[in-house]
Image 1 (tube, rainbow, N blue to C red):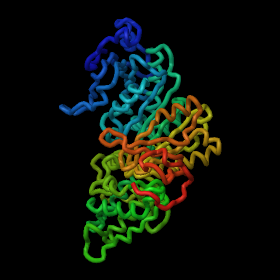
Image 2: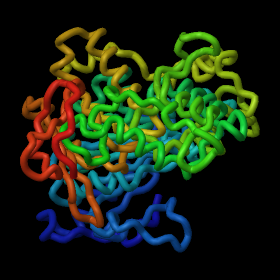
Image 3: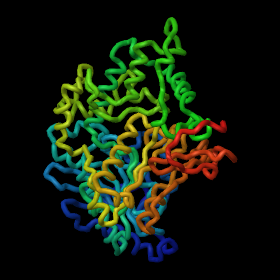
Image 4: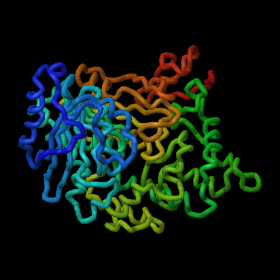
Length: 516
């Protein structure tokens, strides 16, 4: 089947050491490749800088990353592991400079579209890459109503089928299988990563899982419950105009424990905030909180429990430092991803509204609604570890969408279940001042693939990573990322924007000695 690929070209002798016709044939020949429970629906060579995502809105500018993508062979697949499956997968194969490895990439939200930007980054780094839409179209949960097999595809099967198909395509195209296979994702992609380690331990040698949104259906329900609490009455609503004031109060109470006052909380768990100190002395104003608003502030920063009880329904909550982003879960409307999840997966009704939702009363129904396909909470990763698999987890401490506790809890559960040997195969790095997958006042960039590759291929488990922050495209701050349980502490000399002047130490509060 012919496909439109922008500009389809033959790759010259100077790039891959073969005649142009041979190069084009090598890619086009994939059209006849046999794929278990699937078909190749299109192949072609895409010239450097000509790829345009099909999901791009009309007249929208093409993101600059695609202009840098070198020539690659593009294979488009449709996989049908069940009678109701329709999983779209693409495999991109660098025309030259392939590093011999596969980097499969994860999705965000409810997927429904191929993660082209992440695939582009992988090819730029020399990887063959693969991505999937997980079996449906549209970043919402409407696909799940009446389609349990599609929910299974979304939950875990699509990524597994993608991994097998991608390795088959790579082997056919290059004449050899990838030497190492990796998975890299954040949020939904983080959950996809740990789900792969749990269910299919042979799929990947190394997995990078950022902000892993496991226990997903309960997480969605908890977000709706929190939003109802934050908007239970007009008096309870905290207007966004007050967020900076609250944030400054938090920084005053907690910043500086790492030895520098810089607007970033190195360890928010050591921070104790008294929102009652912001109580209005008289009339409501922009510089204070009403009693109802104080209750809301406490609600968004404490675990969700049953009414009149300390029994936790959901252990996650927003940590100190996330105040500027409270509108993500506490704004006037609930998070759209969560509303579509509960409406379609729990109630099977896309028109359902959450205003009368009672999570405590509906908890059993919520938990049973997805039949566990999105829970992804199995801590027994021994099969993955025993075959040499490595899991690198990371999470922003100021994440306003997926509570950071989901990563710390899962990490602890794995260590407890597998035992001390797990320390050689799992690592967790919390990122101070970082929002959901990116953004925030803290440095949010680090070499994820370099870290996992060094660990898998050379046995170098990361004990300290360097994160950077970009401002107008220029690095203006670097900081060390320390293994969970340690924090970066300023040495007392040198620039506080230079990671070299910080050391990783066990989490112990410390008085401020410098100010940025």
